Image 1 (tube, one colour):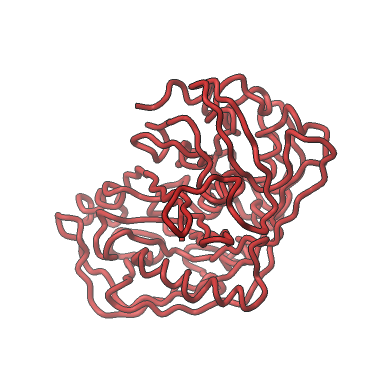
Image 2: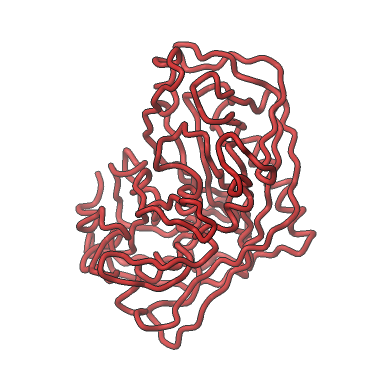
Length: 401
């Protein structure tokens, strides 16, 4: 199994240590990415066009003006460089995870480790939350389904109205606007709500941070990623396959105020992963665990569906995690250099203007980087832009060193 992750680095929650006496400490957020490239059973790198899956994808080849090299990759949907467009629809099962942890953090020491005691906390996206949310918009699962990730809204990027559609489709239309404007080019995710799955995580592999510790709105659950990945590989994906979910579909595992940690959950030096998109071995079943977060611990821009916008956008433009690009970096959550097409990572923490849904809830959606930002000028996107809120005024520049 391979995955691309949205992470918090060692400094993210550790700033809480210095202000733990304050009832409402401010979290200093910095994020980075961790990439495990696609490989075959023998451990060899897999080219995007060689990945086996029933997912509707196209293969592109482009020569980068940033380094003069030619790159090939695969994206979800119909080839925007062709003609005769019709919408691509990807069935997207949404599986709420009702998660119970069995330890509760009581304090944080100067080295970034949490002391804990026994105690159970349940995080349930299907249940009303009247603390961090307000009726009638108080059920995370419902808010997620009603969000612009799945429902239409009119998206206008600068002077360009790309249409009334889902957010990531709007991004993708703008991404290739030079070729698809005025056409019926769409790549849509069609949600199918599945029954929740209940997980009870052992005391050593998960914990809850109560609101009283750092002044969060609600409790935050932390699960060891290795444990969670094992559950995905050995329980969740096989169960979905037995129920008829196949590789043409894109299942999302919806968590509520639950994140993952690279190390033991009491070690904030290795926390937190708010979501990632991944794929199983060949034939590749793509999937994404996503946190719908209302704790307030990650700042005002990383909340509710900003994480979903990041991960669904990255899945659409790099479904198998192996679309190579000239090296870029030192922006967003990437402090070093990265050589892969991950449209969310360069702009983590940057959002487009908030979108108010038909339910009256205000949704946050992360800004995403365009194809031309990675491969170089001239831009083929709407307005000649390099990201969908125009934060990037030019491409990624010289190859990252």
